[in-house]
Image (cartoon, rainbow, N blue to C red):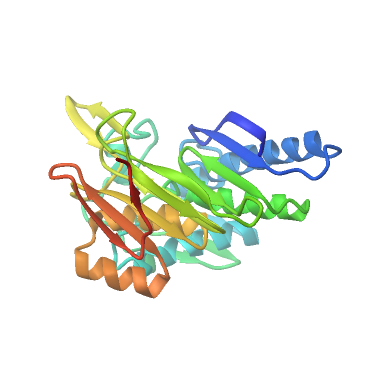
Length: 287
C-alpha cells in the first residue's frame, strides 16, 4: 500500500492513510481532499475550539437552524447512551473540563451526570442543551474515519487503511484481511498479540494512556472506574470508537449482551493480572 497521509496532525493526533492506487493521476488531489476533510471536521466539531459548532452550542446552550450533518452527528452521540446501557455519555465535556481537560473553557459545573435522552433536544429547527457539555471525543475520530472511507470509495479506491491515532478502518488488501497488533496498555513497546480486520473498524481504549496531572492528582479521559484495556471491532469505526469506551465500564454479562446485540467483537485485558477475555474476537498471542 502507498501512503497518502503520513502523521498528518488533526484532532490532537496523527493520521495515516494507506491505499492501493490503480492510477497515480489523482493522488495529489485525493490527498488534499483528505486534508481538507480533516480540517473541516475539526473546525466544526472540536470542543476545544470555542468558535466550532460544538463550542458555540456549549456556550450559548441553543443552536438555531443546524444543518443536517450537525443534527446527524449529535443524534448519533445521543443514541449511544442507550445502546451502551448508559456507559457512554457524550454530555460530559464539563466533567472532563473540571479535571483539566480543556478547563480553559467555561463549563457546566453540575454534579450529576446529564442524561442524553433528556438533556439535549435535537431537531432540524433548534438544538437545545439543557444540561452538561458536549464532547464528541469518544466517537469523533471514528466518525471522521468513516467519512474519509466514504471519500476514498467515491474515488473508486477500495483497498485502504485509515489510522486516526490508533483508531482504524480497514477495507482489504487484495481481498485479504489485514493483521494488526494489540498494544499492551501499561508496558511500552509491548504487544499482546494480533487480530485481523476485513471491512471493519477497530479501536482500543484504556485509562492508562491519556493521563495528565490536575491539582496534583492524576486524571484520565474515562469518566468512571475501570482497570481494563479494551479492543473492539465493529462494522464502522465510529461504533468501534464509542463501544471501546463502553467496554471498559460494563460488567461481563452486560458486555456480552451488548456485543451480541451490536454485532461486535470485543476483548478486554486486565494488566493487574494479565487476564485476557474475548467475545467473538480472533486473537493470536505473541510468543
